[in-house]
Image (spheres, one colour):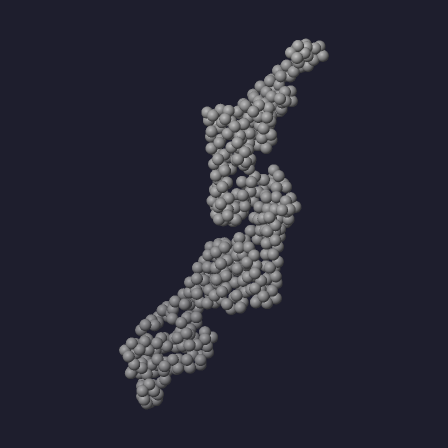
Length: 494
């Protein structure tokens, strides 16, 4: 057999081929050296070209594949690099750098378990290899981040998931799976531009990526652009018909849009009870859709205000601004409800928030009106003291004064306890104050407009309620209370 082999070697027909192989090897080495030079100058595209030429000349050389893998890694093409690295170790299983590059590609693409196997093989070949030791630790760190993120996602701790994915992506920059999970959690946290940016980057590289399409739709859905969101969900389902999250989101989006539109229609038709029910049903569809739910709460608050359920309206608007603290319409609706329930301090606070955000003439006037009503509310309510409406006529004011003055006159309560006498005397004085202001057209106008009555030179603490009483009933000693029995009084005019 040996003789035959030697004969094969010296046969004239095969001699040129052996010479060609040697020449091919020399030329391949030349291409490799040129590739190395370009690699050193960081011209990775040219380095790739020369390494490819070397491989074409000698396709069984493991180092050429290893070098091209390193170049592709520098170009960020980890999937192509992985193919070359794997080919290098298939050709030479003892090629440590080949195993390291294979592991690095696996890790960059997010397959930490496969990366661990590659680094372990490198360590079997060279147990002191510092790079293999470090990369093995990195791969295990990524596995740990994945595990924590999975648990935290179930707990809906989306901030923690984003943190874990950011750390994992430091070692796995080309992992679409990690990026998608991060983007989904950013969307859940309301950080829509960031989530959109991540998803768009992936779609630029792979326009058919169903997960990225789903995240784009999710962001639009949570920004209350429901119609556009449905389009992305449908597209994601075309790419991956079994995409469960896209399927659920698409169903929720369609149901939410329909319920909201039905509620709006019922409201416009004046069917407030039906509108309330439809908005309530819509609120139960997806608690994660913050912006749409904020609008639904505000809409339901408007319905409640129409039904004169003002406390419920305030509660709905409060829920709306809890979900979206920039929602001006909800602040305005709640402020009006506060005004209607005479909670002026709360109304002023809401109008101040609105005016700070949108400095329009309309908002400025609403704030001024609320501030005026607050100022007025801190004074005595003379209409309430007399028990009359703010639009009461002069005669109604006089009748009310007569009734209240006689009810609280000190003489009527002369037999009561000292405490009761003191309280009735106070009320008698307030009735006199109220009549003095409301029976004078000029003072009444100033009072109604919220102006300070003291500017008129009238100190309400100095006047004598008895004098007002006597002037009203006529003449000095114009009447007196007489007792006709315990608890029974009548008055007679002099």
